[in-house]
Length: 64
Image (tube, rainbow, N blue to C red; front, side, top):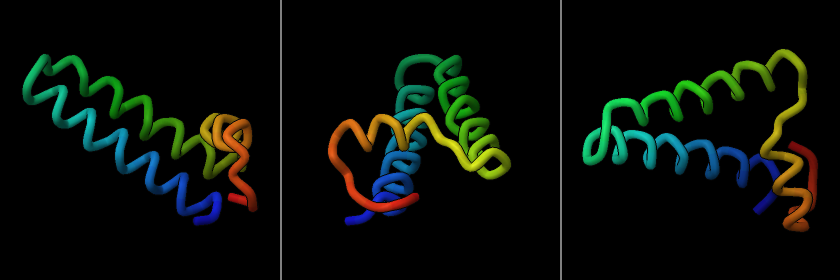
């Protein structure tokens, strides 16, 4: 898998975790989803993403 596939996988997984936690634990977990969405929007405008830094430290090759 390349970097962009890992980014989509990570974002989708975080959103599924958010929905599960909001349903089973507390509605306030939806703020995690808001955080993920804001990071995606921010990365569209600035072309930088905090998840890319994390993935590069995990030796994922390629460009996002």
